[in-house]
Image (cartoon, rainbow, N blue to C red; front, side, top):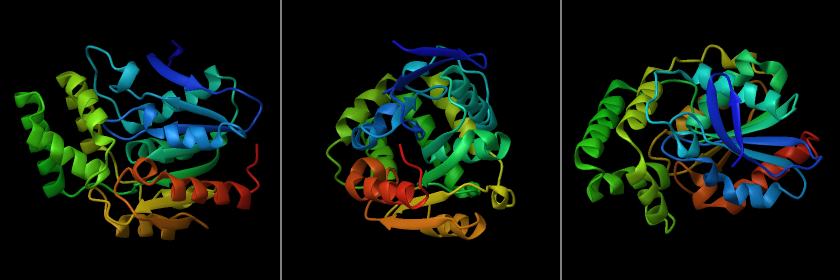
Length: 264
């Protein structure tokens, strides 16, 4: 299996290869690179599509996970690009993947040609929301993911009634307490970059589900207003709308890439 030993990490990745412009997809919390299967299928004929599993997730997960920040994850992404011989790429991120993607654009602007931010925000979660997440995680670990907790996580990440949720519940049951706790700590301790994102100078598309239970649409609108010339598209669906309603998401990304001449 392909691993990149970079930045003190052993990162699992998949790379379609080819000579097209690179798109790197960064997944959300509790998910992994496979969440972008609909996008890779749609774009792999024209672009070099790369997915990777971030710290504590998927095939990158380890038995222990020291504390880290999304700036560390941004450095992981930059190092992965170096490992793959890519100078700059289009970054597509969902939630946590967008958090680290924006920080990559801030810390390593030369690496980023454009960015697509799905189910994202520049700010931080309010204390009540974080307390709810902590309680949810504690119950998950204590009960080894009881069904009622799994159903709540499903609702937050996917919205109601998505048939693909069952497969993710099986993956969640395999996640270990050290990885779950460290990943949640990173989410909860992230900094507010609202006052920084105006310096992001690359083409930016913001995609948000109209029933996103994790991040209010107003947070996406605030990003759109703060990032110069950013575009916001609202699509029917929940937090991980690229999975639950992929066709309009793919169409929006395709139009965005064409508009900015970010061709293969």
